[in-house]
Image 1 (cartoon, rainbow, N blue to C red):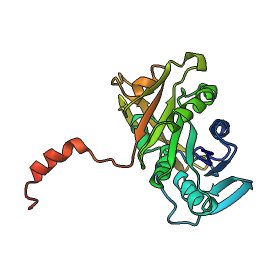
Image 2: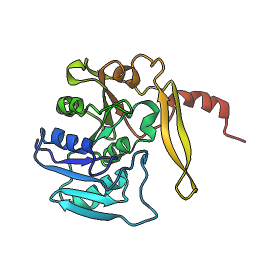
Image 3: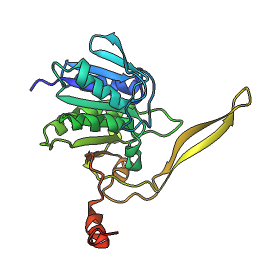
Length: 258
């Protein structure tokens, strides 16, 4: 099967991880399209631009940026407008600068772009490169192993609506221990930090940032895999129901009368 690949991200059209993802994609096919936000939209989750128009900037053949667009906007516009005549057969999102592990997934524009593609019934994979703040990002790890992960996942029969979230560990390529399936974990501690500052005109402003520590990750989780030198692969879908709690809730609500 000859693939047509759409690449999206949340780090923006000029992000180094996007260039890495393009090289990964071209190991599969030469029919590669890029639709990305014009600037970084990390933390955008699955937001769509409902209160302002979408403006598409064509940079080159098969390469577009969305002015003030979100990662989900990028996928929607690709499917509905830019690639509507011949839609993609595979969507790759990333490679994100930083992890998308545990609770990060619910904030992630990288994961959201892959989820949106899965809603269209198209195979999709989100990829992220774990790194330590203040240190260089080991893009070479994602670039070396990305093609193998994509090839492996394409050979896996996957139900419609399911997509995969991949995190490459913060180690050099020769230190990667392998690839492991993993469920979503939970950070040992996690919060959104608010850093209040004052600008040159003495007006207050704030920077938001994630603050989390892995703690002692549970075995079998994405955190445990990635922090142990493994490439973690987690199957995801848009159903966020806590299925284990349905029976207890049904018993608690009884007849449904209030």
